[in-house]
Structures are given as structure tokens and as C-alpha cells.
Image (cartoon, rainbow, N blue to C red; front, side):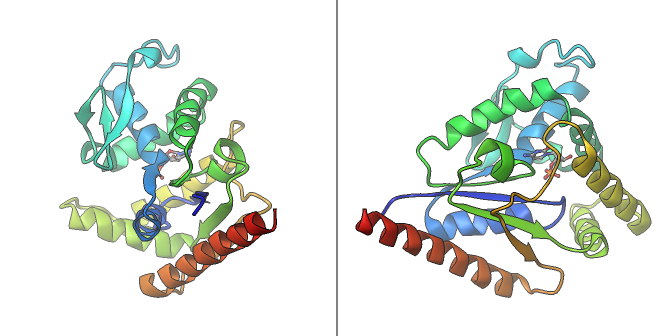
Length: 224
Ligand code: DC
């Protein structure tokens, strides 16, 4: 069967990466978390490997994946990039055109053989505008803040819910208002609002969308 590209975009803390990971497993595809790549660049800035605003050093760093964990210069930094501080820095570096070009080129390379589920903000609009299946995930800011809060608590952090909610709203604003590749729904994306869906309901819905898309392409290929 011909493999496809699945592009998953949406707001922060919508459960995008969990959904993308599970769909990749279901389909037998490779999963790529592009947010982790922006976070790795943010960590490189925080470590002084990349200077702002000159971006000196950007072409010297290597961002990659090993066993679904993001690496910076070969070091597994998956745990370190998940803090609020790195998230905030990622939101500052991700609007920079040079940073986006640096990472988008790598992301397009990763999808050259298809069979990939990639999640981010601009996957269906910029990275893979021809992706066969595009999903746009949303949930209310309150639902997302509660999920993010629970995640941070589970990690042993001590967050304040109001701070997390403000952070979600600020990040939404920055993600949707930046000049370079703002978060926006591709015209041909299917919207999945998961505010009131259980994880199981949501995954069954997404598996059905994937199967239907794969089936449609198979039928189209037979007709050619
Ligand atoms: O999904 P996340 O919270 O891990 O993303 C971290 C930051 O990177 C967030 O501010 C949005 C940004 N990002 C982006 O601009 N483009 C992507 N394709 C993925 C993430």
C-alpha cells in the first residue's frame, strides 16, 4: 500500500503529540514532533550555543531524533526541553525566519519517503502543503491549561493554574499573530475539537479518518 503523509497542526497542549504518536503506531509510520525541534533550538539559545539576535552558531548545531527522543548535538535532551522556561523560549525563537528555514528544510527531508505523521503548527500549510491527510486539533484554552497543569504536576513541578492558563493564552496569541508561518488551519484540514471527547473516542475518530483517506487513495490509484 502507498504510504501517505499525515500533517497534524493545532494549538499548544491539545494533545497533538500523544495523538500523533498513537496514530503513527497504528499506521506503522514514523512520528516527528516538530515542536521538540523548536524547543531544542531554544535550549541551544539558553545554553549559549546560539546567540540572539544574531543567530550566530545556528548552523553549528545539530537537531535530530533518536528513539523518538529529540537530540541536540547528539545529546538526548527530551526531558530538559519540556519545562515552561524552554517552552517560553521556543515561543520566542520559533517566529524567527532563519530558525524556521533551518528546521523546515530538515522536516521536509524527513518526509521524503512518506509514511510519516508530523505534528506542529505549520505542517499542513508550509512544510507539507500536499499532505494527503491534514488534521487541525483544537480544544478550549481552559481544557488545555488543565491538561498542561496536570502534566507539570505529574513531572514534580509546582505550577499555579492561573499562570498556566495565562501562558496558554499568551502562546496562542503569539502562535497565531506572528508574521512568519502563523498557526492557521489549512483550507483542506479536518478540524478535530477534543474538548469533550475522551482520548479513546478521539483516537477511534482519527483512525477512521486515516483508514478512509488511505482507502480513497488506494481506490484512486486502481482507477489510474
Ligand atoms: O508544540 P510545542 O509546545 O512543543 O511547541 C513549542 C513551540 O514551537 C511553540 O511556541 C510553537 C512552536 N512551533 C512552531 O512554531 N512550529 C512548529 N511546527 C512546531 C512548534
